[in-house]
Image (cartoon, rainbow, N blue to C red; front, side, top):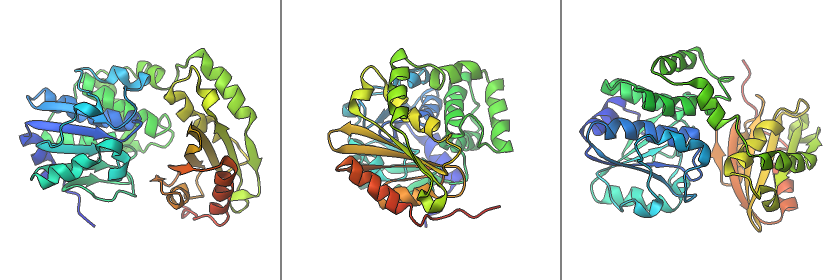
Length: 332
């Protein structure tokens, strides 16, 4: 497996003059926060910088406040080749969507591709890598790079880093003592934790309440599933999403996973007729990444996702079968 070399990655960033930073499709706060934190630091040191993602066409509303310097550009404005291409929070090229071809184009032109990620399923598709599955968020790795470079955390960069931390640790419920210390450092740099949480987590349109009522009414509890550990699942249909942002649909799983009787929670979201994305969460025993991989997806051991085509009932049946004899995580 390729090695992670923080020093070599820092050298790439220090000498870069033209940089494209890519987040995965449907970027979350960790992906876009990581890209923008690095992008802001580079831009303020004179580099030409652009940040983008394959889809959707616009920055999710809850994340727009992170782009302090207006670095985000549409996918169509990303050049075929960059002097340095940085892919963040993206385990494989396929997760870059329509921008995946920029990886090969850059390497074939003699450019460098730096991959910064915390997914254990990372395929090491770059020329340089900073990958650590023990990091709670990719923004943690961004801070390590900035520290290696000796570049200070200003308020705008710190806000981007904090956004990734607060979301990927479930509001610090799964954060180590080191990560709590990092959060304190970010607050000392000027981050308003209440304001960030309000933008990212605690603000929804009224339509979200009606969507949630419909989706939770469909929830099904299967106590015997997942090897007797319990599965709870529900569905977000296209009609549920009228007047609702993508962020709202993605947040449903965090409510469903609170079900005390189920080790595993699953939310299937309809993206178009016959096309679905699935979000999986586990309390602490079942490796849901292994389940997602059976559908061609991936993620983390306790939080993963996948895409699937076909009839809803068939997908639920396949999910139930994938959990019949689940991969268990080592205890203690």
